[in-house]
Image 1 (spheres, rainbow, N blue to C red):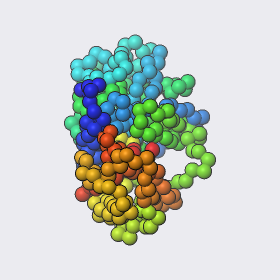
Image 2: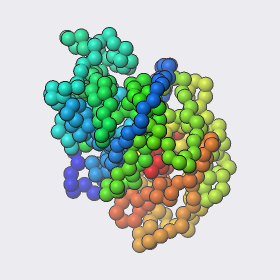
Image 3: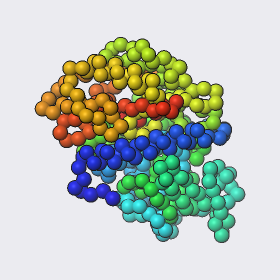
Image 4: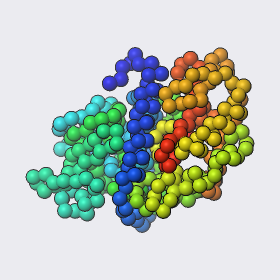
Amino acid sequence: ALSSEDTPELLFDLRLQRDALRSGTIYSLVSKAVARNPPRAAGRRSGFSSSIISGLAQGSGEYFTRLGVGTPARNLYMVLDTGSDVVWVQCAPCKSCYSQSDPIFDPTKSASFSGIPCGSPLCRSLDSSGCNQRRMCLYQVSYGDGSVTFGDFSTETLTFRRTSVGRVALGCGHDNEGLFVGAAGLLGLGRGKLSFPSQTGSRFNRKFSYCLVDRSASSKPSSLVFGDAAIPRGALFTPLLTNPKLDTFYYVELLGISVGGTRVPKISPSLFKMDQDGNGGVIIDSGTSVTRLTQPAYTATRDAFRLGARNLKRAPDFSLFDTCFDLSGQTSVKVPTLVLHFRGADLSLPATNYLIPVDSSGTFCFAFAGTMNGLSIIGNIQQQ
């Protein structure tokens, strides 16, 4: 439980601990993946949108959206997660529910709530399913950090501002345990067949985008947009790749990294390439905070950054960060630029997306980390 007296340092350290568990979850999912067919859908409908709110005030490094669940709609905070598929909310009656900022959703008070029969294709699409005594579908989703949600798999209406989307398959969780903080549930935005975009893609031309607010809890909310309006003018595109063994994640092709205007020579595209078995590669994940680069790429990037920032006063390591600086008393500093080179698009990061404050006394750290796993993860700090 979080206390109002918790320091920014403690909150940030807790966030990094959850972040390490999150990345571990992803690595274990990929390593255990069994081949499944990627989802397909077609059709069209005009777009809709929702606000995105930083979860920092709740002690979470994740991002929340506010949407209505049920009829009449009950507004709830939901975690945005491009790294998982199943949509779920905590439901009354609770066998075990964690603390959330909204009242627990009560399905008996919703006119649009409906259970899903055991033998239905939707129930069979679950990785882990069962049946209750009434032959209705039960679901369970376990996360690698030990968190779990269990309950009735059902269909319900979700409302994004003024747009209602009916018959969305979601978990109504009566037994939810683990590291969930503040939000009432999770909006799965992955590529698997049970994610919200895959279920409803035919209604919004299979397009969605999100823009993440910065880490300050006082920031104005940004938007999660579905439909043709999701593509802003002047947008650059990089192809999405598909892992033959796991359909959930959004893989992209990272070709190299530049620091201080110079391509880092020790980073070749092969460091980020996914092999035929689905190992390696690069994913974009909204639920991971800190970008993890495969170790050789991280070491080369970090060393180039240290060289370019050699005039800055160094500070001790902080948590998983091994390159920190004491910027106390300084109003502005010059740091090397950083560019991620994707196929078809170069992403030039603002300095605030890779040199971040970790305490209230002027310590800033280089917000990347290395991983011995071959899979690299682009996290939400770098996506802001």
